[in-house]
Image (cartoon, rainbow, N blue to C red; front, side, top):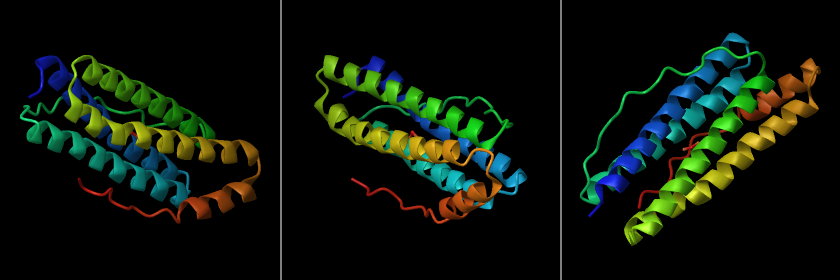
Length: 169
Ligand code: FEO
């Protein structure tokens, strides 16, 4: 059973995950418009991952006897000043997601909901990976700043990323 407070917080996080997919698709559109198909592909892959994150919350809410509540999603930012600015923005967004996952975990602990804690543990680990991967691209962009050739090489490298669906529990 889920308390109404925990159910509300899980639904809110489901929205955050689906919003993340929307935001990263917007970033993919920006990169496409800048003729950087590798960056665009990387962001599209990230958007697919975020969809699976939202789906995990949907599944958990159903399985834990809760009620899903799909909430309105705000329009994301669509225009960015540069690839570097885009990754700065996305890393900040991931910091926000990490913070909201941690708060959810605190609530699950406070309520003694063991099932929710085990479910959320996957996201705690995932956020460490996500912040690291966004942070790595940001560092690489800082290194190649002003170097068009370096940017193209990075674009080729990022284009190699493929979507691997997370294992289902
Ligand atoms: Fe699912 Fe990138 O947070």
